Image 1 (cartoon, rainbow, N blue to C red):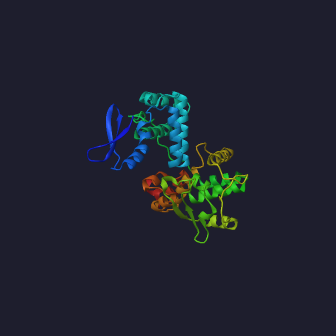
Image 2 (cartoon, rainbow, N blue to C red; image 1 turned 120 degrees about the vertical axis):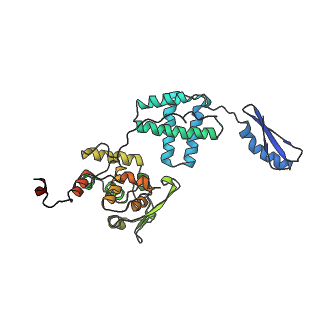
Image 3 (cartoon, rainbow, N blue to C red; image 1 turned 90 degrees about the vertical axis):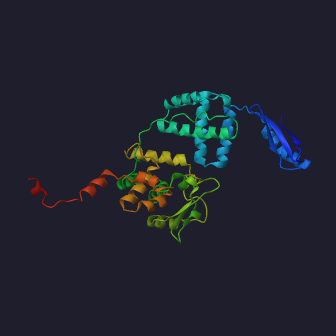
Length: 339
């Protein structure tokens, strides 16, 4: 039980026990009433029980992630802990061991792809580190759990003809406009879903991508990009003073996951690669820009990457483009030289 007292120097201190040892904290005042006020604010934390179960910690993490992280990242925390509870049950937080996390990894691998399992593990590692920082546990049980080996894969992208094929299959003109905006700007799904009319500056022909109360740009890096001519021509007559640019069929805000599922349906309808997803439009934009000889440093700024190293993953080119480029190399009278 924490208490407070005055030392010989006249300053008040509080004493409490942690890990079997007595510890002191200065209350920073010689005034009794002020010391009582500071002590009362500290006492609940010093005397709080150190026992917490996994369910209680899950609730704390959900509250923390919603207050401090983006909606997408918060969703990752919720999903990871939901699966962890299903695997381990409501164990005391201090009872969770590295072996339990390894068991979780192996169990998840039977139902999810290695990439998904690795996302779960990284999320748990970060969350349990918070538990260490909050002095709920002494060691992070997920810290040494090895991630699964995942072969590197090139980003999947569309050729221009494939993109136009998908657009032709879309009956809803609103969704077709969303796809065109995505492919013309390289914006992320969340950025598009939260795009408002106030973000479109038709006078300067620019698009502002910024943080909002219900949305945070990845890396907390807002940016402004040029508005392509096609976007200006299509959206300028539709402009409104406020509100979201893209709405669902009922006139409400778009759900990001619903956008991805809908895009995937059109991919299947067109008989295209099953590896294509909505984010492939961003991959495609970057590839098309690089194929048009736009400097990679410029593409980096347009995409909002923190480093050119990140942008370099988009430096792949389609086989058709490679063949076309290679065919430009011609040797005159090559037949005479080889006969």
